[in-house]
Image (cartoon, rainbow, N blue to C red; front, side):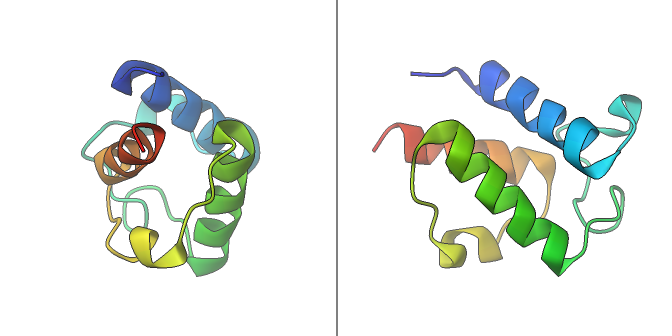
Length: 82
């Protein structure tokens, strides 16, 4: 079981490595779309990367409500507890 901090670190790594986002721009309150400039295609890529890293199937519906980095951490945390 991963802690929220580990999930956050994993997510930051993906955002930096895959989406070339500056590490200092990422925080729990950052909006994926406004602050980090992700678009819908990036969001799909992010879900795929998270699935690969967690080994869990992520339903697109579960990610529709995700707006901030904290929302992603909460969604992954919830998945890991299932």
